[in-house]
Image 1 (spheres, rainbow, N blue to C red):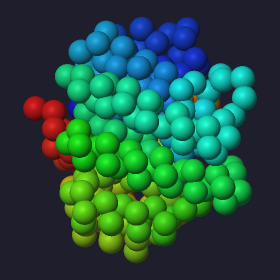
Image 2: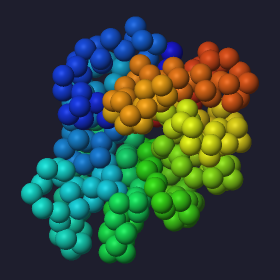
Image 3: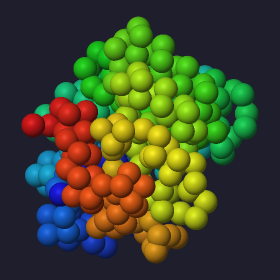
Length: 275
């Protein structure tokens, strides 16, 4: 079966069929799902989903694009730099409490995203939230799910320091860096998240990464409702479409689909410490 290591089923795009999808995942060859928070509210929603569905687990954290909206994306106005930092201790305290839940297995998604906002003040705010949540993960003894977009080297440098000083374990989710950098992440013991982009015509860099690293260093993910694989690109994604990802990885590695499923399942169970 397939372990979907990164999903967002709390998203409103699943309001019409969330229960149906998550109640029937086993019949679609999906064995487990990690539902990942991006704000405090979605982190709480991830915990709630894990309580409702046996094979759903949770991750809690503040996404880098949400550091000005750390509680709820629907806040009326973004927080200023100072307001966000002032709120940080309260949010981190609540995340730490959530991380103690029996089905919370990771801190995430956290990291850096310089794609949408080019202002240095925002980048510095992201860095401060990222480093604070890495420290939280260390205290909670949880691995981290890392988002990195247009900030590959800086993400790498921060994670390397966190591994050396804090003993952090990490998966770089929706990996978009070079194959060479992925090899360096693997040398540090980190994992690489691979999803629908590996099937895209313009997904050459990710395919090169899959070829360059061992299967034992890969986690399978949807990032649903985003990044549906070919032939569903542009549509709402969900875990049932992961067969196209495993088939592409199997072809790139020259192994069977079952071997991809089995090894990435073991990788995810080991990383998230799920028996």
